Length: 346
Image 1 (cartoon, helix red, strand yellow):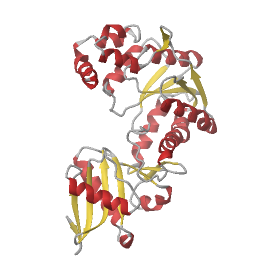
Image 2: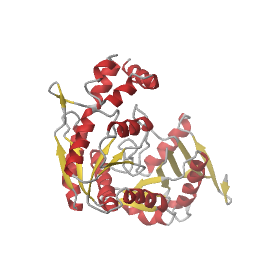
Image 3: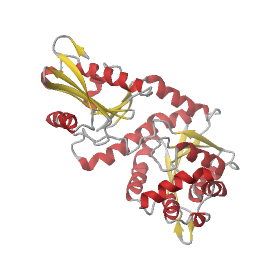
Image 4: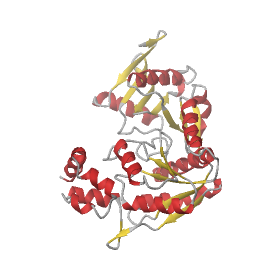
C-alpha cells in the first residue's frame, strides 16, 4: 500500500527480529519504548527510511510516532486508519489509545474521543457510542435512580471471601452494582467467572451483576511506553482507572459507595486500595474496606484456591468456595481449567 509518490506502508511483524528491531529503534529515537506484548506493527517509509509507525496489542493502539520532519504530512491519521482496517479484519469493533495529554488535539482530529484524562495519561477511543452504551447499561441497572453501592471483582474463581464481601454490601445498602472484570486473561474464563458469581449469589436479590466491559482498566493492558518515570506507571494506571469510575461510571449509576476487601497478601492490590481512599472521596464516593472472611485463621483468597488445585487437592477447596463453585470444580467441564492450573506449576 502506498500514498502519493514517496510514502509506502509495510507490515512489521514482531515475530521477525529485523522488523521488530526497526520499530523498536524508531520508537527509541522518538523517546518512546517498544512493549513486548505488541502483536502487530506497521511502518510508514519515505523510500527506505521509516518516518512513522503504529502498533496493536489486542484492541489497544500503541507506539504511534511520526518523525518530526514529517509531522505536517498527516501521517498520524494514515497510521490510525490502517490500524483500524487491520483491527476490523480481526473482528475488533473499537480501538483504545493511551497517550500523553499534550497529544489531545492531534488524536481528536483523527476521530478519537476522550474517555478520561489525568495529569500523566489520556485515554481515548475511536467510538463515542460504545462508552455511552456502556454507561447506559449502568443507568439501566438502577432504574429508580436511588443511591447505590458498588463492587468490582475478578473472581478467579468465586470464593466464600467474595461472597462475604458482597453480603456485607447487600446488608448495608438497598441496591448494589457488582462489576465483573471482563478482560479474559484469568485462568478461569470470563463466562465461567460471571456464571459462578451469579449462581453463588442467586439468593441475594438486591445485587445486580454487570459486565465490566472495556472501561474497568487492567494493569495488563495499560501501556507505559510514553511515561518516562517508570516508577509512576502503576500510579498513573490507578489514577486513570479511578478517574473513569469516579467521573463517568459512578454518576451513571448514582454510586455513592464502593466496597473493597482488605488485602493482606498482595502489595499491589493494597496500594490500589489506598489510592481509592484518596481519590474516590473527591468524587463524593465513600470507600468502605471490609476485613476478609477467614478459614482456619487465614484470609480466604482465590489464589489459595488455585494453589490447592495446583497441588492436586481439589477436594480441599470445598471449605473456601460456595457449593456452586465447588460443583463446577469437580465437574468434567472444569477439567481443562484444572489441567492448566496444574500445568503452570510444573
